[in-house]
Length: 103
Image (cartoon, rainbow, N blue to C red; front, side, top):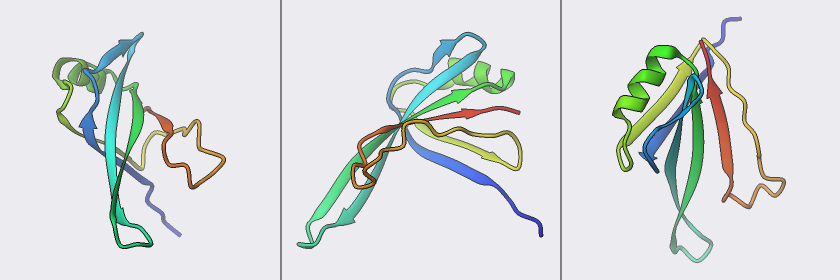
């Protein structure tokens, strides 16, 4: 059976991309919207830190990603990612997730 691994984060850069050795880190704000039990609209912002390890992508991110820019980070069928800091209480959605992408 053939499978496809796809992971995408879309949102807005919370700060300019930062150099971290040979890597680059980009903090991405993503917003979720839903209606609660009382039919009231609820919005929550999650902050995701993405660490980029690919040399060309690092150079592009450091030169191009500025605070407030729309950002899309994704990987498909290559590389790997690690999620750190998943909340113990799944109802607490205010947490940071760190993802590292590599070739």
